[in-house]
Structures are given as structure tokens and as C-alpha cells.
Length: 428
Ligand code: FAD
Ligand code: PYC
Image (tube, rainbow, N blue to C red; front, side):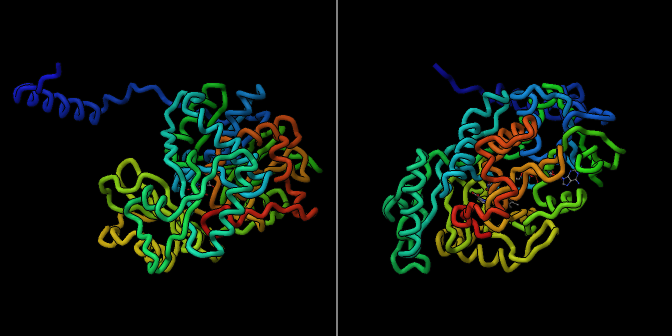
């Protein structure tokens, strides 16, 4: 049977932990094994991936694992995951409207479900469910259409009554005279959150162990082409030749496309988020409302993670405007009056590249050997493994993976757009 430790034992344990903390702080950690190497760039590679976010690292990992392509470098201008991968609010789900998107995002969710084991790295996937609220009759009809379409694709999706929403989230205000009355919600139970940096670090470590060179502080400043073919990239660490170049730079896809003489149908916008001071667990699922432009979940540290839609103007500044925060906090407090006295801790922004149909581009380009994976807008974290999986196939085979084929650039000339504005769940 467990017996309580004596005061003397507690004192000794306390001293031990202070000693151990001090020892680690003073340099004991110096002998830790690196999670990945930091090699100097080689003169040439079979594949150079530009962008060391989750998508670029996942692409490199699956190139090595699934296609045996290991002479690969990932070039990152800053630090791994310092772009949108480390700035997002970590929501994962696959409740998209159209068949093409369902296949892509569901593949990704399934990869997420086995990712900690595959990478041997805990990405802290928490399938706590994602609720999308309906506030009007129109929302209810739209929600019902979506839930049926999602189910027809074999993906889990349920409709909840206001009472069921209240049971799932007791602190929400569902009174009929509320400013934004809750008339119902859709729920994807398999949706949830994962630790964003862990996803980047897990992919980085696993790619490195298969021979991929991960090179940080290496900005690509030019894409060289000879005639119709890519030759390599100019970087702040010199020219690097490559048979193939995959560009995966989230908010800077147009900048990189310009280097190759291409134009993409993309607008770049700030998207911001913020967290509150930590509090005891009060919200056990993810709650989103597209109508009022706010969503919230609670982190393992207890902070509320809160976001809104994009800032509507185009910009490369990684911050957002105050009026968006004001609107999102107003909406949050209408839905959750209990949060009215909560203090906010910090706010940040990222740049999201948005296509006219709110769907990504995963594509070959008119330049032979040059590929783009971009335009994930506000919703690419959930797609990280799936995006890497299909893009690795596209790059390795110089032909789109069947799941990626509908997301090629030619849809902007054929008109076969995949309009997912509604599924974005945050306005863009
Ligand atoms: P990034 O992580 O941005 O990686 C691209 C990398 O390219 C960057 O590290 C950058 O430094 C590098 N780079 C750029 N230019 C160069 C260059 N010239 N040379 C070398 N490297 C370069 N999605 C969801 O699914 N769920 C969410 O809850 C969610 N919330 C979000 C909240 C916010 C506030 C933001 C900003 C985004 C959110 N997203 C969400 C979207 C999601 O974060 C992105 O779609 C996704 O992380 C993109 O991953 P990535 O690897 O393509 O991009
Ligand atoms: O795509 O689920 C999403 C999302 C949530 C917040 C930002 N994007």
C-alpha cells in the first residue's frame, strides 16, 4: 500500500530537484544527443525542398521513407517551424465539403492518427472533437448539407442540438435571447489538436535519420533555370544545384514563384491568434463559429487559444490589426460570458497564402523539375502529413499523386475550382 512520505523525505526530494535543476541549467545538457544534424550544404542534391515548416519537412521525410530519395536538402531561412507551423492554433479535422478535399484532409487525419508511432515522437494528438456552431436558420441548413456530404465520404460527422452543445461545453451561453443564439452545431469527434512544434521536430528528426540534410539559416534568394528546366537555387550560403526543387514556403509562395518567373493566383494576408492567462480546465473540445468569427480551445497549460478570420488586407507583416482582436473578443464573450474577466497573455500573427477557391496548390509547374505546394490559407496545419505524403509522390514521380491531382495549377485555367470557403471555418 502507498504510504505518505515523511517531512524529512520530502525535504530531501525538494533538495534533490533543486540540485538537479541547477545542474541541468549549468550545462549538464551539453551531452544531449542532437535531434538532427546541422550539416553544411552540399554542392548538389537530387531534391531541394525550400521551406522548413511542417509541410517541407514532411515532404522530405516521405521522399526518403516512401520513395527512397535521400539525397535531399531542406533549406530554411530561419529556424524549423518558425513560420506558420509554430504560429497556428493546432486544430486538426477533415470535415470538408467536396470529395477532392475530403480525400486529402482525411488522408492527413489518418496519417496523424498513426504519426507519433511512425515518427517515434510524441506529437500529443488529442482527438477531443471539433464543434462548429450554427447561429441562424441559414447556418443550420448549410450545416446539414455539409454533414451529409461529409458522411457520404465515410468521414465521421454529427449534428448536435443546443442541449447537446451545452452538455459538451457547459460554459457556453445557449439562451435563445443571446446575441448569437446557438441553434445547433456539427461535431467531428475525431478532430482535435496536436502539438505544432512537435510535428515539425518529429518530421525533422525522422527525415534526418534517413539521410536528409536539414539546413537552417539558409535563405533561398533565387531560382535558377536553364531554358525550361530548373538548375538549382541561389542561397545566402551560395548556389546549390538540384535536379528537382519543391517550394513549400506558406506565406511567401508568390515571392518564390516570382524568382522563377511565375505568377500564382494567391493573395497573402495576416492571420492572428492570441492566448489568455492559464486557467483550470473549462473547455474540453474545440469550439468554432464561422458566423461570428471566433474559435477557442484550451491548451494543456490551461491557456485559452483564441483566433479569428484573416485580416482582410494583404500584407507580409507578421502581426495583425487591433480591431480584429476587438471583434473576436466581443464574440467570445457573447458566447462565453464567463471569460469576461480573463486577461490576455500574448498575441501573434502569421502570413497565409489564400487561393481564390480557398483550396491549396499541389502542383508541377511549367518549369521542368520545379514544384509548388502552397495556398493552404488558414487551414494547412491539419494537412501537414497528408500534404507531405502526396507532394513527395508528385516530386518523386514527376506526376501528381491521384489525391493531389485535382489541386494542380491547371484548375485555374480549366475552371475546376474546389470551393472550400465554407469549410475553412475561419473566414478567408
Ligand atoms: P510554414 O510553417 O510557414 O513553413 C514555411 C517555411 O518556409 C517557413 O519556416 C519560412 O521561414 C520558410 N521560407 C520562406 N521563404 C523562404 C526562403 N526564401 N528560403 C528558405 N525558407 C523560406 N491550420 C490548421 O489546420 N489549423 C489551425 O488551427 C490553424 N491555425 C492557424 C492560426 C494562425 C494564427 C496561422 C497564421 C495559421 C493557422 N493555420 C492553421 C494554418 C497553418 O499554420 C499553415 O497552413 C501551415 O502551418 C503551413 O505549413 P507550412 O509548412 O507550409 O508553412
Ligand atoms: O482550419 O481548422 C482550421 C483552422 C482553425 C483555425 C485556423 N484554421
